[in-house]
Structures are given as C-alpha cells and as structure tokens.
Length: 281
Image (cartoon, rainbow, N blue to C red):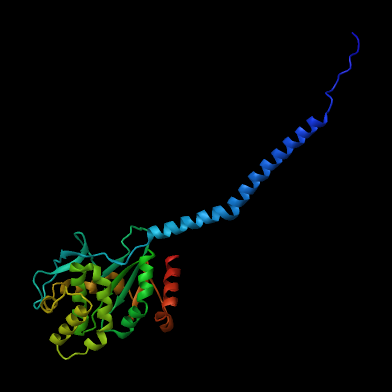
C-alpha cells in the first residue's frame, strides 16, 4: 500500500470570518444570559420579594373591629339591683369567660399575640396610658400584630361600672362605634367620675356618647345593669389573680407581663416598640 498524505481543508478568509462571527454571537449570548441573571439578583428579585412582603402585609391588615359582639346569657349570680336576665359578650354562642372588650383587625391570623390590658375607667394612670397609646394600640391591632383585650376593673366608683356597662351595650348593638365609644368614655372620665349622684353620672355618659353620634346606650338601659354580673366576674380571672403586685395598668403580651417605666408607658413610640419586641419572643 502506498503512503497517502491526508489533506486538510484550506482555511479561506470567508470561513475564518464565519467562525469569528459565530464565536462573537455565542459570546454575546453568554453575556446576555449573565446580564439577565445579574439583573435578577440585583434588582428584580429584591423588588419581587419586597412586593411579596408588601402584599403579605396588606393581606394581614384590616380596620380595628370589635370581636366579641354577641349577646350570651350569663348563668351567674343575680344582682338584686340589676336585670334578672343577665348577659355577657361573646363570639357566637361562646361567652368571653374573662370579661373583656376584644378588638382585632377582622383577619384570620393564628400567629398574632394577645395583648391583655387591665384598666379601670376611674384610674387616671391606666386611663392616661390608654389615651396616650390609642393610636399605637390601633396600629398594632390593624397591622395584625396583636389582638387587644381590654379588661375593665372596678375600684369602687360608680363611673367605672356605668362606663363598662355602656361600652358593653355598644359592643352588642353598635359594634362599628365600639372604638370611638371607648375613647369617649375614657376622655370624659375626669369630668364624670366625680359627680354627686349616679343619675348625674349616667346622664353625663349618655350625653357624651350622643355628642359623637352613639345613641345605643340610654339612661334606663345603662342603669338596668344587664352586663353587671358578667363584668364583675373579672375577679375570677386567673391571670389577674396570679399578679403579685397589681398596679394599673396591668399589661401582658402573650401572658408575659409588660414592665414599662412611667416614661415608656406614656410614650406611644416606646410603648409600641416594647410591645413589638415582646411579640417576637
């Protein structure tokens, strides 16, 4: 067999240009892919994550809403001076066993913490704390961070009982005005809690509520004491009884006492930060 020399195709200028062109196209495609990936990681993904977080936050937000607005028969002791047909507030047919006015944002959120706030309408320190932090409390509820449970206590003044009775009636019959009614009763407490007679106190409550367009509670219904036995059962609250040195307001977040200084208690920003920090534990 004779030796044969293998011949290679001759490299022409046109074929070289085609190869260079193809290489440039492939390199450009790779660069485009890399730029797309870089843009996604740098700009698009964070924006998408941020938008997702905003959407999630928006989905969990809602307007502050009275929760336990049902009238439930209270089968406790009867008070001689009160309506024999005693009632309590509840959800559906379930009585709120520890008397409380409960506010949520109307959204389902099993992860939100409960903020228990024990106060007395006639106690200035507790009342001032609620008024000072009303916007922060409303924001905490509406953002879905907490479910607010306001537990009224009674230090002996008639105003405390009549104010709680009035708010109970608003919860049951005019829940859309529950938050407004609470603020009216708190702000008018200094002027009304020191009146000479029960009639004058009740008349003052009705007038203050009516001035804000809240007409559910009238003089006779308030004095009837339909919710009196339920409200007074606060004395059986195990959380309250476990407090070693009760000083109003007594505040718990997730059953953990929120210990604040006097300055923090009346500083809305400090109060809100303290509650949010406690919800993250």
